[in-house]
Image (tube, rainbow, N blue to C red; front, side, top):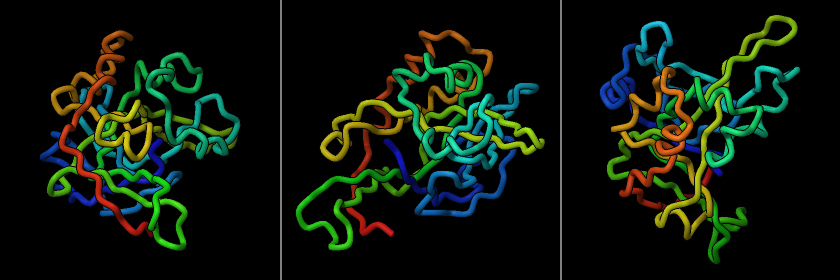
Length: 212
């Protein structure tokens, strides 16, 4: 799973890296946590322009009575999401990119910090360049009119770099597939699943960290 990640790129770098047409200001963070408002890239259905907006991490299904389920839905297994009632419509129509500069996983190892039972590893690329995790988002409106837009990170089996630490990892979307992944007009289930089966980036570097 993915329970924490980092984003330390500035606005201009994100605009250039992801071809954004509009961008909310992004405050750098090395500890993005579930339920926080955090940057998500999606396209506006009206004009297909890419925008970066801050959404709540932890998907709230549109039919949910309240937001309490959000923490349980910070991740969705990519192999199963298209068949799950909470995720299937968003997989088809509301796909997004979650920009990051690294993600954390933990492993029980000898010599881990005394206060921690596990050692934290940060997976990043050279120079902490931003890349994109695959996600889906959902609008929710409560009985009193409260409106929340939320998202979840799609996960997959760990590749050869991550698997020594953890058996799951976020889906990483290849930059060549950004346009197709974000396009709400692309509804073909088989192609959507193909876009989720990528091993990019192949240059992830695991770094041990004393977690916060």
